[in-house]
Image (cartoon, rainbow over the protein chains, first blue to last red):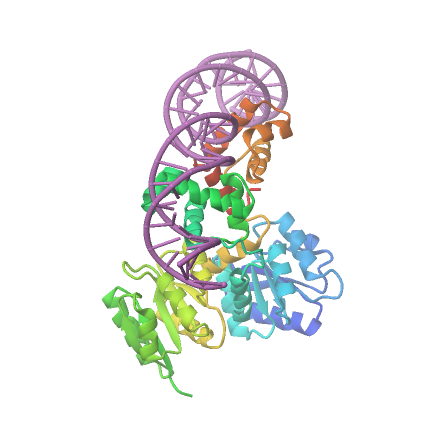
Length: 210
Length: 210
DNA sequence: TATGCAATAGCTAATATTAGCTATACGGGA
DNA sequence: TCCCGTATAGCTAATATTAGCTATTGCATA
C-alpha cells in the first residue's frame, strides 16, 4: 500500500516540524505539506493532494474551523482531524459542525496520535476521551423544553406513534381497545397543543419526549 | 492502587468466562461477578460493589439497555460500558440515552478492550470508531446518510409535511392542486419505504432530510 | 370521604389519508 | 428522435384519523 499523504496546518513552527518529522518516521505515512495558516487551505489541498488533513484549531489567522469548512466543501470525503489545546464545548461542536472527522487534544502522546490517525484512515472517528465524554453528554442533556406532563401510558402511546404505528397497531401492541388509543392520543394532542400525528411526532422527536 | 473491580453481564457463558479470565489476567483489574441476565442488575451491583460494569446489550432476558438504566438510576457515577455485535443507530442512541459511558463492539480485540476500559477508568468515553462516526454524524448539518434521491419538489413537500401541514395546506402553500400533493407524497413514501406521514416525518427528522 | 386524575371503553360524524389507477407537458440524455 | 423522470392534475374506493361526546373503574390525596 502507498504511504498515506498527510498535510498539517499549524501556526507553531516547532510543532509543525515535529509533527512532520513524526509522520515521516512512520513507514506508512508521509507529510506532504505543512502550513502556518489555513487561509489558503483549499489551494494547499489542491496542490498537495493529501489523504488526510491535520488541522490546528487555534491559529491567529485563517482559523482552523473556517479552513475545515472550506476544505470539506471542496473535498467532502477528505478526512480532517482537528487538534487543539482546548476541549471546551464551543470548540468541539464548532469543529464537528464544520465537518471534522476527529478531534484530538494536543497533549495526545505521539504513539497515540499515530494510532488515532490510522483509525481515521480506516474510517473511524478518533476522539480524545474527554471529547467523547462531552459529545455523549450532549445527547444525555435533559431537554430544557417545557414539560408536557404526559402520563407514562401517554408516553408509551406517543412512542408507538413515533415508531409509525397506526391506531389499530398501537391498540394491539398495548393490549387495549382501539377506542382507548383514540382517547390517549386525544389527550396527548391536547397536552402538546397539536392536532395531528405528524406534529406530535415532530415535537416528540425534537424535544426528545420519547 | 487497588485493583479495579469489574462485573460482567452477558448471556453467553463462553464469552462471560473468557472476559472474566481476561480481566483477571491483568494486574490492575479483577472480575468480581459475571451474570447471565441484567434482570437483577441493581441487586448484583449492590452485592459486588464494582468500579465498572461491562454490559452486553443483546441479552434475551433482562435486556442490557434496561439494566443500564436501572443501574444508572441507582448508581449514577458507576461507569457502564456497553458491548454489542450491532452498531446500528437505534442501539447506540438507546444505550447513550440509558446513560452508558462507552460503547464497544464485541469484535474489539482483547488488548484494545483492556486499553479502552482503562480509558473509561480515567474518565474517558471509549467508543468503537464506527460508533464515534455515527455519533458525530448526528451533529452534522448534512449527514452522509443514505440518499433517498428526493427531487427538490419532493423535499419541499416533505418539509411542509414535517411542519405539520395537511395535504390541503401544502397544496395552498405550494400553489399546486391537492391531487398533485397526493402524488408527490406517494412518491416520497415510495422512496422512503414508508406508508404513513408519521413514519416519513420520523425519517425526515432523524436523518435530517429537511 | 369527596375529589380529581389516569386508564379504560364506547359511539358518531366529519375529514384526511392512502393506494390504485390514468394522463399531459416539459427537459435532458442515449 | 425517443425514452425517462419530474411535475402537474385528476378520479375512486378503502381506511384512518380527529373531534365531539358519555361513562366506569381504581387510586391517590386533600
